[in-house]
Amino acid sequence: MSPNDTPLTTPIRSRGTAAESRSLLPPYFLALGTFAIGTEGFMIAPLLPTIAQDLGMSLSATATLVVVFTLVMSISSPITTVMTASLKRRSTLLVAMTLFTAGNLVAAFSSSFATLMCARILMAIASGLYVPGANSLAGVIVSPEKRGRALAIVSGGMTIAIALGLPLGALVGHTFGWRSTFLAVAVMGIVAILGILYGVRRDAGSQIAVASLSERVGVIRQRPVLRLLGVTLFWSIGAYTAYPYVAPYLTEVLDFGSAGIGATVSMWGIAAAVGVTVGGRLNDSFGSNRVVFWSLVLLGTSFATLSLATRLAPSFALVPVLAAIAVWGFSVWSFFPAQMARLIAAGPVSQASVALALNTSTMYLGFSIGSAMGAGVIGTGTVWGIGAIAAVSEVISIGLDRNHIRKA
Image (cartoon, rainbow, N blue to C red; front, side, top):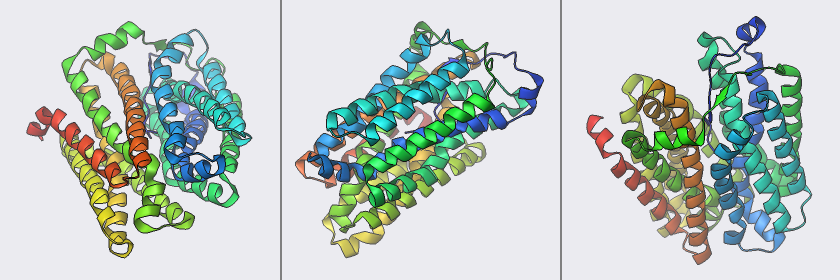
């Protein structure tokens, strides 16, 4: 999951009321939904071993819950956005959040892997529709001078989910069982539905124009955008080759139990939240190319460290592994604001939202590929391979970015 998913729609001037223009309150209600979605998306990784044990399945087979979710989200998001173009934006978000909440309820009471998989597919479709729609709506229901803050508020729901929702989900899951986490997220979904119902006007965003599939294809054909999307693809492949399998890695390399895993995941979440915030500031101070380059270097180095640490005894591996995970959390998301800035600058301003939308779809495609590769590695029992493949992916990302590196 991303903390700054971007609009799959092209926002144009809305006929919002003066009250909407003055208030930043509606974006906060929209952020309730991104917080719930972010919590669900990130919390499942530390729970995979528990789910596998409870359902009597191998870890690699259970990991397809992540693979399928990210693949469905990447494919469905642009399609469902176009399909719902005729609906009011508020209605679309309510439908999406209702489906997301229903998916979590099904998951909470599921008794089989097939049911749980169907629930996650439903959640993926709903998430791919809600997140870009919420960002797009936030950009038009406030006055232009407040647009940046409105988008930051909605994206902040994801950021808070990384910092707080992820460790909270892990804690609840390990204490009360993995099904309880889905139940907790369903409650968050209900709160988000109520927030949208009572905090966002019925006609909000009535003039948002949805970018067609042909417009998306036209942007992909531009060489600068295509190169940047390639960088995003391998960055995300590396990130999700490792992330879903942090729990089995910590168990094998550091002999951690649920408490140690939960604490480590919490540390990763806090580092990631700091990375998103600091990455944006570094982008403004040092430029996008430098931030992207050094973020990828740090990220690749942290993954290589995780791979090499598997050769050490737990007592010797503790410090390098925890340090690498903290650097990983920071650098994996410090990359993202700078990459978004580069995509905005890669073409005409009128195409920026489409380029960012394609970046989101590319990111989730990479998440799916990476998590599938990680599942294969876990299935062979070679935990060191997770860090190795992730590191190689980041090296490829740097290689694809060579033209920008020369400018850094």
